[in-house]
Amino acid sequence: MAAAVEFYFDFSSPYGYLAAQRIDEVVEEYGREVAWKPFLLGALFKTTGSQPLLDIPLKGDYARRDLARSARRFDIPFVLPEAFPFMSVAACRATYWLGERDAEDAKELAAALFDAAFGAGQSISRPEEVAEIAAELGHDEDQVRAAVQDQRIKDLLRREVDAAIAKGVFGSPYIIVDGEPFWGFDRLDDVALWLDTGGW
Amino acid sequence: MAAAVEFYFDFSSPYGYLAAQRIDEVVEEYGREVAWKPFLLGALFKTTGSQPLLDIPLKGDYARRDLARSARRFDIPFVLPEAFPFMSVAACRATYWLGERDAEDAKELAAALFDAAFGAGQSISRPEEVAEIAAELGHDEDQVRAAVQDQRIKDLLRREVDAAIAKGVFGSPYIIVDGEPFWGFDRLDDVALWLDTGGW
Image (cartoon, rainbow over all chains, first blue to last red; front, side, top):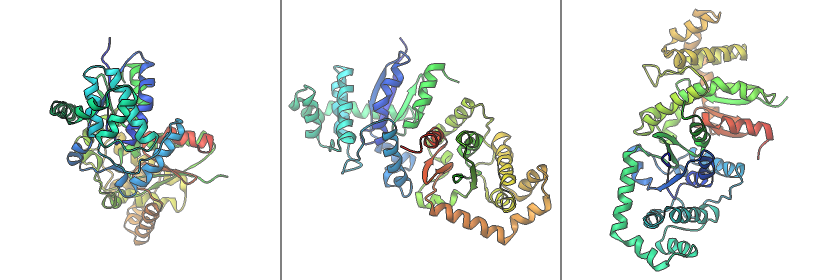
């Protein structure tokens, strides 16, 4: 079976959230699976000289409008959390911790975290908040809280972030199909076409 | 008749070039016209804290790949000129100067300048180079050279750039449909859908 399509995102990225609502449907139509790979975009802002999108003069105002419009176009519930951008390290760690045992469980948690943040406007930055959402999916709340503080899981996330940077990932969402990189929610059509044609 | 769709671009913007190859076809399908409005993106880099896309670490490499791939997807000839980014002020002034007399002549010159730069890799930064391309379209070479140095035309361009900034234009290409802004070559599908549906 062909390798999974890699879907890199930051939990604090609204365009990452929008992509998360569509990526599996787009990719599975071509008989492929998606590996969800949360990472920490902030680690890259120094390299690219960038800053959180919505804080940039002019671009930030445009992005707010474009986000709401893009969500409406695809009937995706969307709200910007009050605290934004927010720390997403706990969400990342919990996802990778679950992923060690079951990739589907990890993806389910990641989707629930995204929905809580950008679907319902809840805070997901604190470990307790992440653990509570995991508990609603049947996971042990105390175990999740412990995992998020576990040095082994901290190291696991650090390795994943380093690996993403080494692959050239610099934005969210960032999708890699058979080595070919696509940056941005607005590249999902290109992702579909690449899967359909094998590239051009 | 409905107002023209406004197409803002910098002659030094490769994504602006790609959009220029498709914008009229996309918009005219809905019975609307396109007003081409070159401007100087550099004037905005201070405000948005940005810099020329291809100079940004990681993003620049990605953009080179994405530009070539996007051009191939739509069968658009594409080459990055040796001197890049380049000064586009002479190209802008010549276009607005012609536009005072005939909007279609101005659009034809703008398209020819873009084709020379990104279709053939030629330099279009010097007034002589712009005048030569205009001459190939039947315009008087000396007149064009004089117009590019004319204080009145310099002021005209300055007013156009100020007007673009006042409208919130901060990137290239930037397309406004009935007050609704769309930034980026990859938003042409949204532009078409907006024209088709009247917005959502």
